[in-house]
Amino acid sequence: LEEVKNKLHLSVYKDKIVSASTFNKKLKTESNIENLRVNFKGFPETIDNQEIVDVFKKFGEIISIKTHKGNNNKFNGSGQITFKNEESSSLAIEALNNTKYKGESEIKVTKYDLQEKYMVDNNFYVCSIL
Image 1: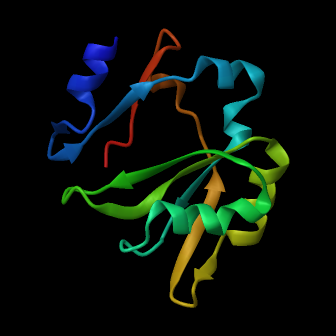
Image 2: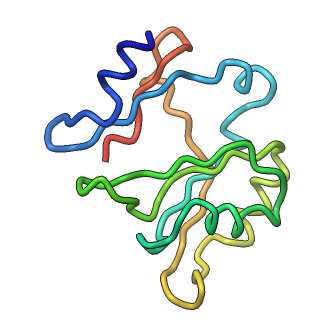
């Protein structure tokens, strides 16, 4: 499984970059991951992960952050944040969706949609075909 993940991750399929990783089964069984994770987009490409974490951490404890890269292999302004609890993700969506980041770019923060069709044996998934 790890070998397949390593071959697929950041490979190119139909001129798109593929992201592949193992599925955190423990997180899925402890709470519905769709209610813990939020999608975000619209951040400036020059922002770093710490700045994104700083925006979201006021809503609760963050378990992980995943940022997406474009064809140029640089941050494209989008990704996901996973919170420790559902209330934090709901608060972040409510407070941040359709707001301006530092008065400039409009950001979107929405509920994460776990696409089961990409999962194989609940251990591996492919997503973020940008």
